[in-house]
Figure: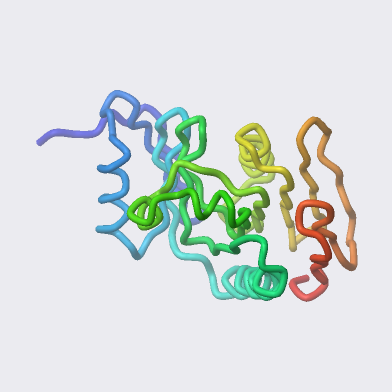
Amino acid sequence: MARLPLTKEKVAAGRLVLNLKSVGLSPEQFFRLCSDNREISMELTAQKELVIMAPAGIESGWRETKIIYRLADWALKDGTGVALGSNAGYTLPNGAVRAPDASWMPRKRWDAIPKAEREKFARTYPDFAVELMSPSDTLAELHEKMAEYIANGVQLGWLIDSYEKHVYIYRPGQQFETLENPTTISGDPVLPGFVFNVTEIW
């Protein structure tokens, strides 16, 4: 029986990483793999590592829903862009396929994406991306992911650690900023007027 060339394996709290570099998984094959296995979440790194994640726990899901709701409400009122949830996958300029827990992109870029491509992992990037730490994450891995977002066009990133009550703010050309137990965080100037009461998910 044929076996995948597994050179790196990590199993921790519902997370598995497989090295598929020599397999040559195409974008279409990866999309079909995700479509055929909707009960799990998958991402593909720029190094062609397949990251398989179990569904979120209900508390992590509640936190994610709360911030998506607040972001979507602001986006509908603002009207200049589109808010997306964690099921939206982006094919970043470096080739990685990532699905932030919440994201936003300007309507101009959204409108430029062909409708057929919107049904797949479109080759684009958000201006704003949020990652919420869960029990299966490590802080080092999430910092690396946030740095990748910024390197691939994201203008503002929030990494929210609800366990330690820390928020890390990422912007291009700057060292990330650490906020300890903040009450609110602001999306200005990328998301003018968007303020999230982070104590809602502590």
